[in-house]
Image 1 (cartoon, rainbow, N blue to C red):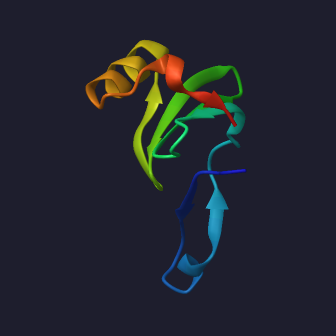
Image 2 (image 1 turned 135 degrees about the vertical axis):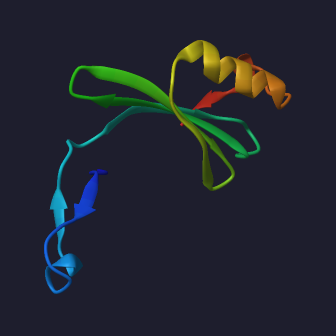
Amino acid sequence: MQVKCRLVGSPAARSRRTVVGVAEWIQGSFSTPDGLWRVEAIRERNRFWYRLWHVDRIYQDRLVIGTVEYFLGQNGVDWADLVED
């Protein structure tokens, strides 16, 4: 589970983190057979979006499905080639 955090207070207090957002839930994920690309479906309260990973880094975040398909296509990946994790 991921939460958004920020540092607050005096320099002594800045070593503590305070939660300022809500948790994100991964609803499902798909990846290429070689594991180079992964798409995660994310939900946060009543919001829903996609996160696109390349190898071990976030490539783009908070995307709609059409944008995910566009980025994958630009990198030679067909949506139909993805398999559910």
